[in-house]
Image 1 (cartoon, one colour):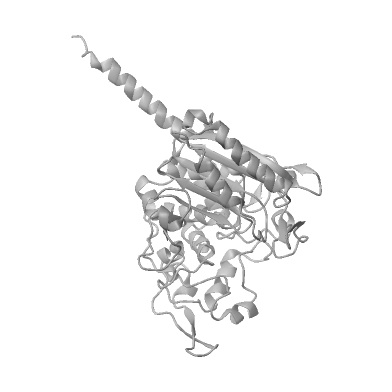
Image 2 (spheres, rainbow, N blue to C red):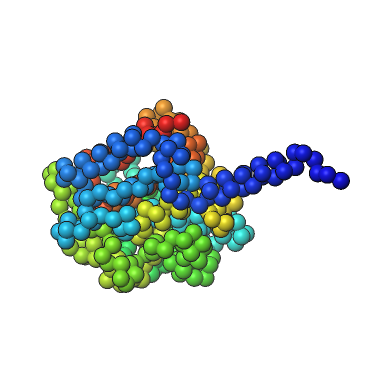
Amino acid sequence: MPRPAFSRAALGLIVLAAAAAASAQSLRPGSPDSVGLSAERLERLSDALEAYVENGQLAGSVTLVARRGRIAYFEAFGDRDREANAPMQTDSIFRIASQSKAIVSVAAMTFVEEGKLLLTDPVGKYLPEFVETKVAVSQEGSTGYDVVKARRPITVRDLLTHTSGFGYGNGVGGDLWTAAGQTGYYFADKDETIRDSVRRIASLPAHAQPGTTWIYGYNTDILGALVEVVAGKPLDQVLRERIFEPLGMRDTEFYLSPGRENRLSAVYSRNDGRLERAPSPGDSVGQGHYVDGPRKNFSGGAGLLSTATDYARFLQMMLNGGALDGRRILSRKTVELMTTSHLGDIAYNPGQGFGLGFYVVEDVGARGSSGSAGEFGWGGAYHTTYWVDPREELVVVHLTQLVPAGDVDDQAKVRALVYQAIAD
């Protein structure tokens, strides 16, 4: 009996759909025109990024723009190391600092998916020092403060949403944090494990009661230590097995592997309008510890090194609903949960909420810059940034190494010039 006439056509459509889905996942090079971007208008982005180098505002940068699973723009500008006269390359390695948070948050959610962890679990279930925590509370009409018991236990969700009350030691009770030598995001110089660091953090008072305020701080470092306990493995091994190897992120690690020294970008500073190389190894920005430091502390909050390509692969996985190149990291529903605001009535930035590891755009007009509702992203202390716009099927990674950045506005320019290049 002959097959219905529509059968072959339907099969063809299925094959085309499968090919399109595979294409959307693969993150391969493609022309701007093939994904609805204007090559001519993207030249404005190149002109702007070149100008930041020529004007002495940035030593160098790498910017990657992908749309519909294709890398349509991938350029390097300036120098990786000005003093060594070493040009920036698209495979240059950067300290991504707080961009580590999204990766560790995803790792934690893989354990949620396996039933080994719940968002509602108290952190003290895994880290005993958090069974009962303290909070520094300002005294009304005084510059003093009292240290009181936390009203409730900190949960895993508090860590993922930065509502645990723990900052970076610079809030109420900050003098106790300074005296304990526990302030700032940098751990690469510490001759101790993150587990040891987190025990110290737990002994100090938080700056707010759990679940009441969005405070940026040690939440993801605590989460990383918790992940180590749940996994029974060091955090670097967990990330390698669950994220880096499946996604082909070959250049992402906590400390620089031998032979990669000539790819690590130098850190610069903006001081009084001048661009200067950041201080030598051992200073607060830690030029050398990623190469020859103790290599003991795996900071989930700010410790990773990466490249634009590696980080774009991670983001494309999120844009794809949790999978890339046939390797599934998370379910689509988990990605949806992570990229939905969990803050409720807790105040945050205009037009934005905060999910499980990412900011989330809720109102483009209230935020006041180009983008789409549902966009999610973040950045890092060395002046790196990224975002994903699911509505436009867009991934953007912009990496520099500048601390402090001062008034350099390259991130805002990158955003404006990427969106003006959309031509469909």
